[in-house]
Length: 254
Image (cartoon, rainbow, N blue to C red; front, side, top):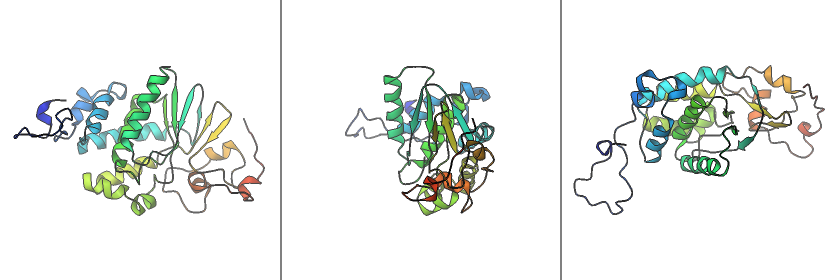
C-alpha cells in the first residue's frame, strides 16, 4: 500500500509508529481487477489487507464484486455436495479480524491445497464489520469457486438486516443502492451442504417438512425467505426435544 493512500500525519505525532495510519483513498476497481482481470486473477490479498488496515472499498468496485459473484452463487444447487477434506465454519457475525485470523491459522496448520471450507451463514449483523466480512467472502468465492462454499444464514435477509445493524452499517459506508445489491446477492446463496455424502449441514435445522435431501433442491431459494416454509426452517429451525423435526422419518435418497 502506498504511503500517499494513508491518512496524513503532518505533525508526526502518532503515539505508536509501528501501527500504520489507515488508508483514506477507497480501494479502486482497477486495483482489485487490473485491466478487467478475470475472477481467478483478482487481487484478493490486496483487498483483505486494505480492509484489515481500516480502508474502504470504492463503491464501483464493491458493486462489481457483487455483480460477478451473483451468477457464480446462483449457478450452484440449493444443496451443495462438498467432498474431500472440508472445514466447516459457523457464524462470523461481522467479526472481520477474527475471520482473517482464523483463515491465517487454518492455512498455517493445514497447507493442503485441496482443503475446502464450508461457511454456514450469518456473516453479518451484531459485529462491526458485516459489509467487510461479506465482501471479503464474496471475493474468496470468486477467486476459489471450487474450494470456498457459502451457505445462507437467517441474518442474510432483509428482515434481520433491518432489525439488527447491517443495513445501518451499509448506509453509513455507502447508500441504499449498495444495500439492495447486498440483499440481492444474499438471495443467491445456497441453503445446505452435504459433506462427503454423510454430514448434512445448514445454518438452522432439519425441518419437519424435510423428508429427503432431494426436497432441498426443489426449493425456490432466490428470494426473501417466506415465513412458515421449508426455506425458513433450514435457515432458522432449532430442533427441540419432542418436536416434529425429531420424529419425522427421513429418507436417504442417494
